[in-house]
Amino acid sequence: MPANTDSSTSSTTSASTANAGQDINSPLVTDKGNTTIAENVVAKLAGIAAREVPGVFGMGNAARRAFDTLTDRIPGSQTNVSGGVSVEKGEKQTAIDLTIVVEYGTSIVDVAEAIRRNVIRAVEQGTGLQVVEVNIDVTDVHLPDDDNDDDQKKSDSTNELS
Image (tube, helix red, strand yellow):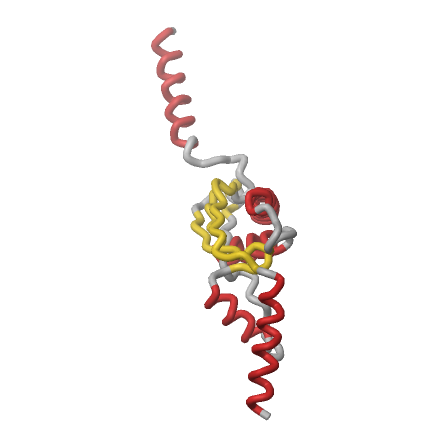
């Protein structure tokens, strides 16, 4: 009898080991099929979630923000919500890198933590993927005077065209 118990145990162990790579509890991998989510979907969800956090002025580096500002002025164009977002995605997990500009006077540490919480919640609830990390690169601080400088530059360029 012990021989039979051992062989059935080893068969069960082998079956368990073979299934260990598949998480049957994952909403993306089921017995009825698999769901694949594109990286741009994760990037959009993360970008929207990051922009919702108070203290975030913008996303992306200066060139990206300038390009987005120009394209936003084109009638019928859509806002690029995934600008400043980079995603690495596997079957069940994802890692997200964000490049942001914060408002002057806000705590960068508090803003970063709020972004992490919001992005993780939005991506995990929206996709079923596990977010393993959210890296945040703060590239600039937006000063209140920056808006006045931008308005003056726009006014000057409009006058030059007249």
